[in-house]
Structures are given as structure tokens and as C-alpha cells.
Length: 203
Ligand code: VGL
Ligand code: ZN
Image (cartoon, rainbow, N blue to C red):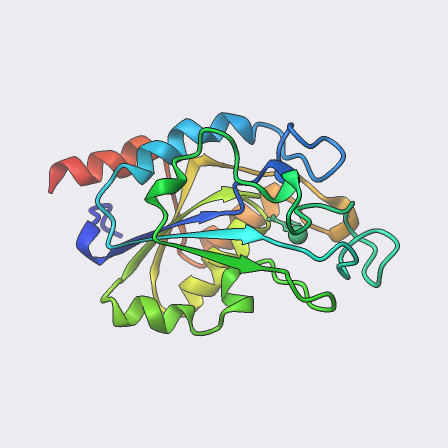
């Protein structure tokens, strides 16, 4: 598969780069190394994408995925209006064109933007986007599901490796190695932010 990226036909999607998935909120769902990916994401944000979309996990306090609730999976995290729901400090959010909130219904989980906003792939197609670069948190959960859904919708999908960080969650059966091999089997490519920037420089 070509590694060239035509930025006029490409979208960057920044997934859940929020305090609640970082060391800043250790009682929520900290992903090791989350704070460290911000510079690489900012480098990607500086490029001339056709679209820049961001997602924000945005849960009510009694969301079904929380411990003590229906699915009993995760500590409360990214609760609407709290620190955990805020984007990471230093993240260049001014570059976001659209912020897609997800997980805001008590009884429905939405790992991927595509699960909550099913018209999103059509919106990308209408903008003549054929390639999406996905980065953020967590690499093997919301980044993975977003990449998978967009790959199945017909886009060329690249995960920006160093602009994402992952975490194994045995209680949910979610593992980093498994997600990577599943993604690679679907033809999803893992590139570094350097390689993606170099593809920009070549054009
Ligand atoms: C996520 C678990 C629950 C994620 C969101 O962004 O990876 N993980 N909600
Ligand atoms: Zn969540």
C-alpha cells in the first residue's frame, strides 16, 4: 500500500485525548504514557488536513460502563463537566474543526465515534476524504474501534503509533497486542508521526 498521503483527501481524527485517560486523573482510567503523546499529536495537528475531527468521551455520572452499574467495567471517567472530561493540557485544540462527543447516553456505550454518530463516514465521503489518520487514547480501545469501523466503511486507515497510547484491560478482554494484530489483518497501517509528516513534505 502506498505510504503517500494526499492531505486534501485526508482527515485526522484525535480520539479521547482527555485528562480522565491520563496520569492527571489516576482514579479514572489512566493510560500509561498518555501525557507523552501530546507533542506528536500537535505535530500532526500542524499539517494541512482536509478535516480535523476530535472525539470526547462524555459520560453521565451513572453511565452503564461504570463500576456498580450495568456493565461494571470501568471506574467512573470523563464525566460530563468534570476535569476528567477536559482535553489534555497543551493539546492544540484550536486546530479541531469539529468535536464529537460520545458515551453521553446512560444505557449505551460508544467506544467509537462511528457507533454514536453513524453518519460520520458519509460526511467524510462527501468531503472526498479517502484516508483517515487516527491517533489518541486508548490505542487498543477507542482508537482501534474507530479505525476498524472506518476501514470497514472503505477508507484507507492509518494509526499514528507514537501519537497514541494503549493499556490492557483484562476485565474487558481488551489487549494491546491483540488489537494491533487484528488491525493489521484488516489492512490498517501503523506509521509514526515522523513518517506521516514526511509524507506531507514529499507532496
Ligand atoms: C475508552 C473505555 C471507556 C477509550 C472510553 O477512550 O479508550 N475506554 N471509554
Ligand atoms: Zn468511556
